[in-house]
Length: 117
Image (cartoon, rainbow, N blue to C red; front, top):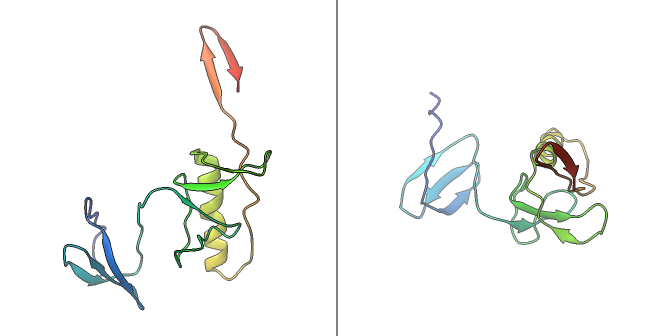
């Protein structure tokens, strides 16, 4: 039997055991097929894996390498987050791919004139 999707806001992960047995700080515990955590900004390598955490991190809450400057930066845009998710899906399927960095761009409208930044 499949459990419905659950969100445990304001709680934190205490343990994640092999076979995806989850235990929260509140003491709640269960077996699952997938765990998605929203844990803040972390620096990752080209495979979207941080040095201090054994799981992949993707999305707009990670620190990436700026494509232009080569320096660490945070660029919370949907496009890069989507690309990272697709790369992780490829890695899960056994393919090797790496994230080459983010080129942060944006557009702002001033009165009737759009301006690229």
